[in-house]
Length: 102
Image (cartoon, rainbow, N blue to C red; front, side, top):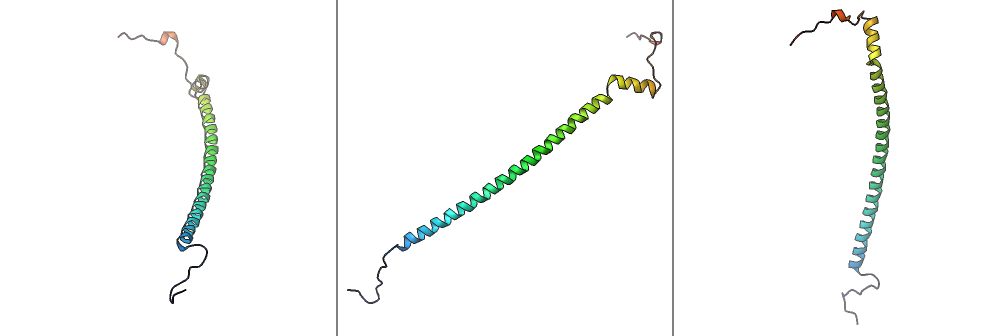
């Protein structure tokens, strides 16, 4: 016998279980979007790393070329050639050397 005003239970899933499933689904979706976001961020950072490594490679090549150029300009042969030709300098004769006692 059914009393007046009393609700009959519907067969199927209870309300707390339905709420638990909805919260669980929401957490799964949040986790999925967080995974997508972190994967995208990781790929963007890796792309930036590759650009920076490429830039580092070109800078190291330039640095090597500059060191080679510096050693060429500062070589003893070139310095002596410029001193003799452009500046008119010459090494003194042995007779021009003076020894100063201490």
